[in-house]
Length: 238
Image (cartoon, rainbow, N blue to C red; front, top):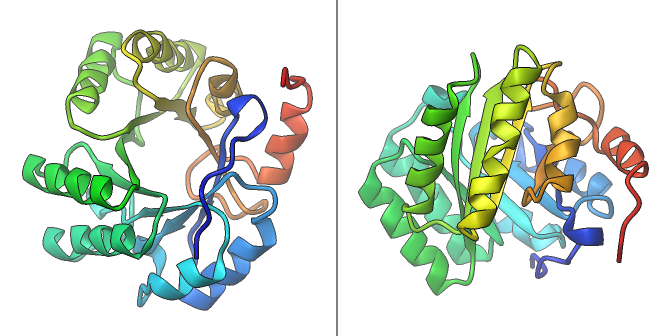
Protein backbone atom coordinates (compact mmCIF):
# COMPACT_ATOMS: atom_id res chain seq x y z
CA UNK A 1 0.00 0.00 0.00
CA UNK A 2 1.09 3.57 -0.62
CA UNK A 3 2.63 5.13 2.48
CA UNK A 4 1.85 8.55 4.01
CA UNK A 5 3.78 11.39 2.46
CA UNK A 6 7.11 12.13 4.08
CA UNK A 7 8.28 15.70 4.66
CA UNK A 8 11.27 16.37 2.38
CA UNK A 9 14.18 18.56 3.40
CA UNK A 10 13.01 22.13 3.99
CA UNK A 11 9.60 21.08 2.62
CA UNK A 12 11.01 20.60 -0.87
CA UNK A 13 8.80 18.13 -2.67
CA UNK A 14 10.00 16.46 -5.84
CA UNK A 15 7.40 14.55 -7.82
CA UNK A 16 8.67 12.10 -10.43
CA UNK A 17 6.25 11.79 -13.32
CA UNK A 18 6.02 8.35 -14.92
CA UNK A 19 4.39 7.75 -18.30
CA UNK A 20 4.71 4.16 -19.49
CA UNK A 21 2.53 1.99 -21.70
CA UNK A 22 1.95 -0.94 -19.33
CA UNK A 23 1.33 -1.33 -15.62
CA UNK A 24 4.43 -3.51 -15.25
CA UNK A 25 6.60 -0.85 -16.91
CA UNK A 26 5.11 1.78 -14.61
CA UNK A 27 5.91 -0.27 -11.52
CA UNK A 28 9.44 -1.04 -12.71
CA UNK A 29 10.15 2.62 -13.42
CA UNK A 30 8.65 3.77 -10.12
CA UNK A 31 10.65 1.31 -8.05
CA UNK A 32 13.88 2.62 -9.60
CA UNK A 33 13.23 6.16 -8.34
CA UNK A 34 11.17 5.43 -5.25
CA UNK A 35 13.96 6.31 -2.81
CA UNK A 36 14.67 9.63 -4.54
CA UNK A 37 11.12 10.89 -4.99
CA UNK A 38 8.85 12.48 -2.41
CA UNK A 39 5.83 11.79 -4.63
CA UNK A 40 5.44 9.65 -7.76
CA UNK A 41 2.97 10.73 -10.42
CA UNK A 42 1.32 7.93 -12.39
CA UNK A 43 0.10 9.12 -15.78
CA UNK A 44 -2.93 6.90 -16.29
CA UNK A 45 -3.51 8.44 -19.72
CA UNK A 46 -0.28 6.85 -20.96
CA UNK A 47 -1.15 3.29 -19.87
CA UNK A 48 -2.82 1.10 -22.48
CA UNK A 49 -4.94 -0.79 -19.94
CA UNK A 50 -4.75 1.19 -16.69
CA UNK A 51 -5.02 -0.75 -13.43
CA UNK A 52 -4.64 1.08 -10.15
CA UNK A 53 -4.57 -1.60 -7.45
CA UNK A 54 -1.33 -3.33 -8.58
CA UNK A 55 0.50 0.00 -8.68
CA UNK A 56 -0.56 0.97 -5.17
CA UNK A 57 0.28 -2.49 -3.85
CA UNK A 58 3.83 -2.45 -5.26
CA UNK A 59 4.93 1.13 -4.66
CA UNK A 60 5.55 2.48 -1.17
CA UNK A 61 5.99 6.17 -2.02
CA UNK A 62 3.02 8.58 -1.94
CA UNK A 63 1.27 8.33 -5.31
CA UNK A 64 -0.32 11.02 -7.45
CA UNK A 65 -2.68 9.75 -10.17
CA UNK A 66 -3.26 11.91 -13.24
CA UNK A 67 -5.46 11.12 -16.22
CA UNK A 68 -4.64 13.98 -18.57
CA UNK A 69 -7.01 14.49 -21.53
CA UNK A 70 -5.83 15.37 -25.02
CA UNK A 71 -7.33 18.85 -24.67
CA UNK A 72 -4.82 19.54 -21.86
CA UNK A 73 -1.76 18.02 -23.52
CA UNK A 74 -2.35 14.44 -22.34
CA UNK A 75 -3.20 11.19 -24.08
CA UNK A 76 -6.64 10.23 -22.76
CA UNK A 77 -9.20 10.19 -25.58
CA UNK A 78 -12.18 8.57 -23.88
CA UNK A 79 -15.27 10.09 -22.31
CA UNK A 80 -15.08 12.51 -19.40
CA UNK A 81 -17.13 10.08 -17.34
CA UNK A 82 -14.55 7.33 -17.77
CA UNK A 83 -11.61 9.70 -17.29
CA UNK A 84 -12.86 11.01 -13.96
CA UNK A 85 -14.08 7.57 -12.87
CA UNK A 86 -10.47 6.37 -12.86
CA UNK A 87 -9.51 9.23 -10.56
CA UNK A 88 -12.31 8.27 -8.15
CA UNK A 89 -11.05 4.71 -8.27
CA UNK A 90 -7.54 5.89 -7.40
CA UNK A 91 -8.82 7.85 -4.40
CA UNK A 92 -10.73 4.85 -3.09
CA UNK A 93 -7.68 2.60 -3.57
CA UNK A 94 -5.43 4.77 -1.40
CA UNK A 95 -3.87 7.43 -3.61
CA UNK A 96 -2.21 10.29 -1.73
CA UNK A 97 -3.11 12.75 -4.52
CA UNK A 98 -5.18 13.03 -7.68
CA UNK A 99 -4.86 15.74 -10.31
CA UNK A 100 -7.85 17.19 -12.14
CA UNK A 101 -7.89 20.07 -14.61
CA UNK A 102 -9.64 23.36 -13.78
CA UNK A 103 -11.32 23.16 -17.20
CA UNK A 104 -13.15 20.01 -16.08
CA UNK A 105 -16.87 20.44 -15.45
CA UNK A 106 -17.41 22.08 -12.05
CA UNK A 107 -19.72 19.33 -10.80
CA UNK A 108 -17.05 16.70 -11.55
CA UNK A 109 -14.42 18.68 -9.68
CA UNK A 110 -16.72 19.10 -6.70
CA UNK A 111 -17.58 15.39 -6.51
CA UNK A 112 -13.91 14.39 -6.74
CA UNK A 113 -13.00 16.81 -3.95
CA UNK A 114 -15.74 15.35 -1.76
CA UNK A 115 -14.60 11.79 -2.43
CA UNK A 116 -10.97 12.73 -1.76
CA UNK A 117 -11.87 14.21 1.63
CA UNK A 118 -13.67 11.00 2.55
CA UNK A 119 -10.52 8.99 1.81
CA UNK A 120 -7.96 11.50 3.15
CA UNK A 121 -6.47 12.21 -0.28
CA UNK A 122 -5.50 15.62 -1.66
CA UNK A 123 -6.75 17.10 -4.92
CA UNK A 124 -4.43 19.09 -7.18
CA UNK A 125 -6.38 21.40 -9.48
CA UNK A 126 -4.26 22.05 -12.57
CA UNK A 127 -3.98 24.31 -15.59
CA UNK A 128 -1.43 23.96 -18.40
CA UNK A 129 -0.62 26.05 -21.45
CA UNK A 130 1.83 24.35 -23.81
CA UNK A 131 2.06 27.33 -26.19
CA UNK A 132 2.64 30.48 -24.16
CA UNK A 133 2.42 32.30 -20.84
CA UNK A 134 -0.65 34.53 -20.49
CA UNK A 135 -0.69 37.97 -18.93
CA UNK A 136 -0.43 38.45 -15.17
CA UNK A 137 -4.12 39.30 -15.05
CA UNK A 138 -5.10 36.05 -16.77
CA UNK A 139 -2.82 34.02 -14.51
CA UNK A 140 -4.26 35.64 -11.40
CA UNK A 141 -7.80 34.83 -12.62
CA UNK A 142 -6.84 31.16 -13.07
CA UNK A 143 -5.30 31.08 -9.60
CA UNK A 144 -8.44 32.61 -8.10
CA UNK A 145 -10.61 29.97 -9.77
CA UNK A 146 -8.35 27.25 -8.37
CA UNK A 147 -8.59 28.69 -4.87
CA UNK A 148 -12.39 28.67 -5.13
CA UNK A 149 -12.60 25.14 -6.57
CA UNK A 150 -12.46 23.25 -3.28
CA UNK A 151 -9.17 21.55 -4.18
CA UNK A 152 -6.25 21.37 -1.76
CA UNK A 153 -3.43 22.44 -4.08
CA UNK A 154 -3.14 24.45 -7.28
CA UNK A 155 -0.89 23.79 -10.26
CA UNK A 156 -0.19 26.36 -12.99
CA UNK A 157 2.33 25.49 -15.71
CA UNK A 158 2.97 27.48 -18.88
CA UNK A 159 5.38 27.54 -21.81
CA UNK A 160 8.07 30.17 -21.31
CA UNK A 161 9.68 31.92 -24.26
CA UNK A 162 11.81 34.32 -22.22
CA UNK A 163 12.59 35.29 -18.64
CA UNK A 164 9.62 37.66 -18.37
CA UNK A 165 7.27 34.68 -18.80
CA UNK A 166 9.07 32.89 -15.99
CA UNK A 167 8.84 35.87 -13.65
CA UNK A 168 5.08 36.22 -14.19
CA UNK A 169 4.46 32.61 -13.25
CA UNK A 170 6.77 32.57 -10.23
CA UNK A 171 5.15 35.75 -8.96
CA UNK A 172 1.94 33.79 -8.46
CA UNK A 173 3.52 32.33 -5.32
CA UNK A 174 3.10 35.66 -3.56
CA UNK A 175 -0.68 35.69 -4.02
CA UNK A 176 -0.93 31.99 -3.18
CA UNK A 177 1.05 32.52 0.02
CA UNK A 178 -1.14 35.48 1.02
CA UNK A 179 -4.21 33.26 0.68
CA UNK A 180 -2.57 30.23 2.33
CA UNK A 181 -3.11 28.18 -0.83
CA UNK A 182 -0.40 25.63 -1.71
CA UNK A 183 0.66 26.12 -5.32
CA UNK A 184 2.88 24.38 -7.86
CA UNK A 185 3.88 27.05 -10.37
CA UNK A 186 6.67 26.85 -12.94
CA UNK A 187 7.34 26.98 -16.68
CA UNK A 188 8.09 24.55 -19.46
CA UNK A 189 10.66 24.91 -22.21
CA UNK A 190 14.34 25.79 -22.06
CA UNK A 191 13.64 29.28 -20.72
CA UNK A 192 11.51 27.76 -17.99
CA UNK A 193 13.97 25.16 -16.72
CA UNK A 194 15.29 27.44 -13.96
CA UNK A 195 11.76 27.88 -12.62
CA UNK A 196 11.56 24.17 -11.82
CA UNK A 197 14.27 24.79 -9.22
CA UNK A 198 13.38 28.33 -8.20
CA UNK A 199 9.75 27.51 -7.41
CA UNK A 200 10.84 25.38 -4.45
CA UNK A 201 12.84 28.27 -2.97
CA UNK A 202 9.92 30.66 -3.47
CA UNK A 203 7.35 28.66 -1.53
CA UNK A 204 6.14 26.34 -4.28
CA UNK A 205 4.43 23.21 -3.02
CA UNK A 206 6.14 20.80 -5.41
CA UNK A 207 8.19 20.54 -8.58
CA UNK A 208 8.18 17.74 -11.15
CA UNK A 209 11.01 15.64 -12.58
CA UNK A 210 11.49 12.78 -15.02
CA UNK A 211 12.70 9.31 -13.95
CA UNK A 212 15.71 9.68 -16.27
CA UNK A 213 17.06 11.64 -19.19
CA UNK A 214 14.91 11.22 -22.27
CA UNK A 215 11.84 10.31 -20.19
CA UNK A 216 10.35 13.77 -19.68
CA UNK A 217 6.57 14.14 -19.74
CA UNK A 218 6.82 17.87 -20.50
CA UNK A 219 9.29 20.16 -22.32
CA UNK A 220 12.20 21.21 -20.10
CA UNK A 221 11.55 18.64 -17.39
CA UNK A 222 14.79 17.58 -15.70
CA UNK A 223 15.75 14.04 -14.74
CA UNK A 224 15.45 13.60 -10.99
CA UNK A 225 19.18 12.92 -10.63
CA UNK A 226 19.98 16.23 -12.34
CA UNK A 227 17.36 18.09 -10.30
CA UNK A 228 18.72 16.76 -7.02
CA UNK A 229 22.28 17.64 -8.04
CA UNK A 230 21.19 21.20 -8.80
CA UNK A 231 19.32 21.52 -5.50
CA UNK A 232 22.52 20.71 -3.62
CA UNK A 233 23.56 24.28 -4.41
CA UNK A 234 20.77 25.40 -2.07
CA UNK A 235 21.60 23.98 1.40
CA UNK A 236 18.72 22.79 3.54
CA UNK A 237 17.90 24.77 6.67
CA UNK A 238 16.48 21.92 8.75
